[in-house]
Length: 154
Image (cartoon, rainbow, N blue to C red; front, side, top):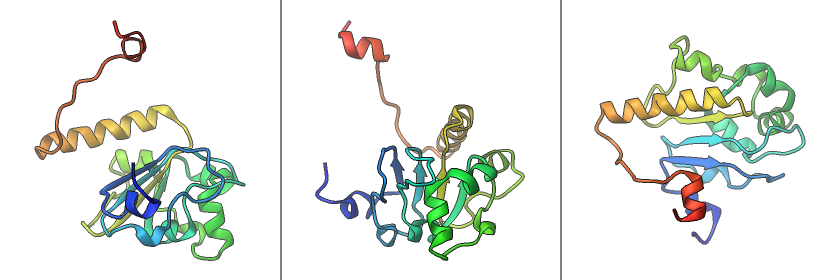
């Protein structure tokens, strides 16, 4: 546990939000250059996990462009606050994964993937990141049990 949202995101390379929050859960000014943010908790025009500063500072990639302009609350609030235009959407996740659009272009770039809940794209994105980490010798293997085993202890 940490004492504050700033402490949670300040030194993080990757920030993942999976909340039911109606208001931003951290201040985008606290993100360090090079941070990646995956927001996967809210796709409701009235709610947002990310503030306008986060959207403004980042290369913004939603799962689907049309959804971002209809019900991605974080993006819609940034539009309403005037810090971004609709063309701030860099690409859809599928376009980045397929190599049709560039992902991160330098180590200092802040990136946001705003997930509206298309599970197959989330899995594909995670697998792509896994493959890149293995290629670069990053990360470590961890042991974990299926949920049923974790619940029953068997």
